[in-house]
Figure 1 (cartoon, rainbow, N blue to C red):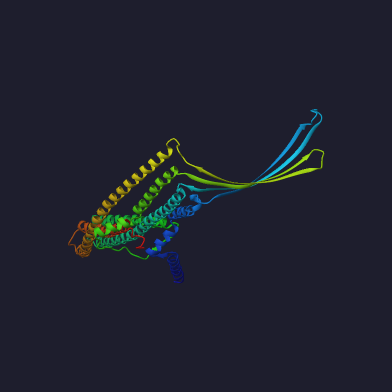
Figure 2: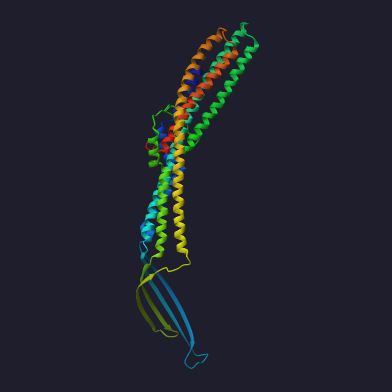
Length: 439
């Protein structure tokens, strides 16, 4: 008795530790955790930061370039004296320090600086739009993975209940055989059904484990972490109107909005290339300082020279011809703009078709769920009645097994129809740009 008490305490302690080790997680917490840890979101966030840093007037070329420099020249001269004698030569050493400062500033370049800055603004917005697309996709994936775990858990519960029924049937037939009222064939049938259900139970346990692994991967968590999900699989049936969904999609779809931004970038590229046909004005100013020291060999006398040169120059240039390269660049930019317009039209058409199909699928899945719910209610009642009939011999083992399998398939179908409805609902939210606000 004492050993049994100690063993029970150990089992309870281990169970408490396992419960504490598991973390309870709501759907909103899961989404928040995924947004913080997801690698793709972190990568797109860094790309946005790069675009923000790059979006400056300095990058666009508005500000002047200032350089400071210095050079030191040492020179040794060995030349014949005035008599021309090869033995009588004059040697001198010269050291020259040459510090300088220079400022180069393009005052006007055909408005290309302002155009370049506008492009940088749009590029930043484009990067932010890409980040929103990744966030939307991640949220949708987390929601579906969250409820996928719950779906597999529900399936596991159904398979386990059927396994328990098969175990009761197997035990019941064994007892009947002991009393001589059942034959070996009935026992084998019951045993096969129990073993089959046990196999399905083990396989479903594996499905649950894999669902948890995929869920953890989206959250950026280790495989060893096991969450207890607090929100069960639920049925969502909103009364959507196709016209309202279409308006929201055209106004809020992140992929489409990003394409609009890209189109503005293409338009700015045309203006940027046209800027090359306008004159360019540049100022170049600075200061040079010459500090020279000279000394003849054998003499202690040194001579110094200090010179300061200041300069300020303006240069005006006008591109009259460069082999047609500027004209070609403008034409190519216009073609890219036309391609962008066609791409927008294609994306809008595809999105409209996708939305119509998705809207019809959503309504069909609502009906399928209602049918599956009615079927499950009927199958459950049929199973309960069949259990009593089997015990009194009103139905044989084959009919009883068929009813068991019917209940299993109906229950799984009901949960899958609920998950499919959830899948379509989240896709509608993502397509119409509302999935971020909904979470």
